[in-house]
Image 1 (cartoon, helix red, strand yellow):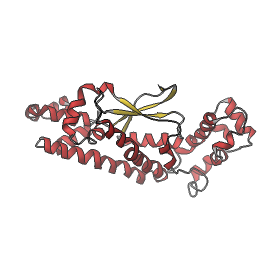
Image 2 (image 1 turned 180 degrees about the vertical axis):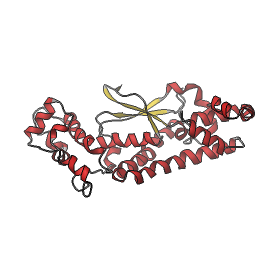
Image 3 (image 1 turned 90 degrees about the vertical axis):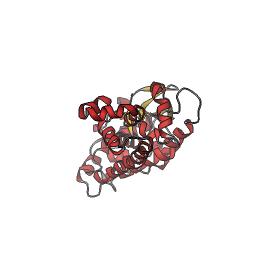
Image 4 (image 1 turned 60 degrees about the vertical axis):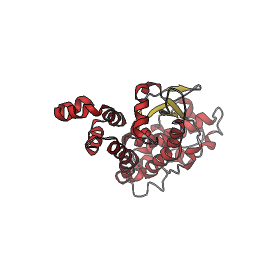
Length: 279
C-alpha cells in the first residue's frame, strides 16, 4: 500500500512517512483493497489521529453498510439474504469481536468466522453477499473444527478495528500478529439462522418466468448423490419446487436419512434456484 502511494505521489509519500503508524492502520483496515485504502487516505488528509479515526468510523461503520444494503436494489429477489447478513454481523459477529478486545491473549481479539458446511443454503448465500460488499473475504473451505467441515471467512479488518474504543491504538497493537486470529464458530443449526425468513417457492416466482421454469424443472437437475436421488424418487417428488416445499422432516421419513442428509438434500434444491431469484 505504501508503494501505491509512492507511485502516485512521491512527495506525498515522503510527507506521510513521518506518520507511518496512521498510514499502516489505514492500509490494514482496507484488508487488501487499494481503492478503499486510497479513498480513506484521501479523506483523512491532513493525516492525523483525529482525522484517521473519524474516517475509519465513517467508512467501516456507515459507508460499507450503505453499499451492502444497496445491493438489495440491484438484487430485489435476494433482499432478505442481504438484510439478514447485515443483522447477522451486527447482532452476532460484532458483539463477539467486541468482547474479544478485552482478552489478554496474543490474538488481541482479531477473529475470523467459520460457517458449518451444512448450514442452511440461504445462510451460505448471505455470506457471499457480505463478501461481495467487502465485509467478509472467503478464506479457506473445508476447514475442520471439532470434527466438522466448514468455510472460514476473514472479517474486514477495518470493521474489526472500529469495534474498539481507541481505534488507532488497538489496530497498532494487533498489526504484528495478524496470523494468529481466533475463530468465531457458527454451527449447523446456530440460533442466528432462525431469523432468516427466506422463501424460494412458487409464490416468490410470481412474475419471474425464469424462476418459475426452474421450480418446474425435474429433480434430475439437482446435484445429488445416488442415495439422495433415491430418497427423492421414493418420496414421489417430481420437480425442484416439490423438494423446496418439503420440510426437512419429510426427508427423514426415508430410511437412512437423518438431520445431515435431510439438510443436504434441501440445500441442493435451494442452491439450484438462488441465482434466478432476482430475474
